[in-house]
Image (tube, rainbow, N blue to C red; front, side):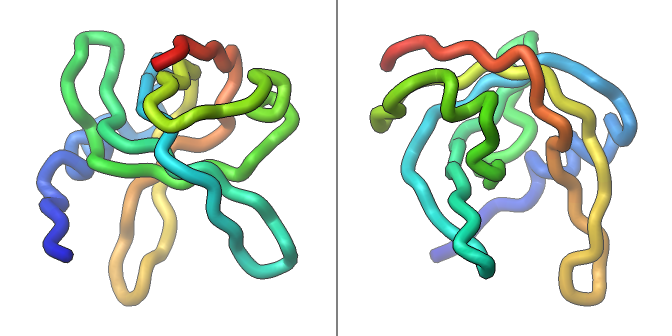
Length: 105
């Protein structure tokens, strides 16, 4: 599968900025240690501009409190753009999600 990484670099221009984002719930996943994760796709900023095609978030208490998530539900949240090492390079992520809201799809 080919991914276009270009939109993700929009996040790179916003490192350490805290803003409001929204993404479509797609599915649950997991990572080592039996941690549940949530895949959001088509992540947009408050102006509706796509900042990344996908994003994994840990299934935190804030996400659990939204209730049962269904494919296509929109999750709106505030988060800070941070960097992390991925392979030999640097990638960007949205960290510390707060003020989570759900809009049914």
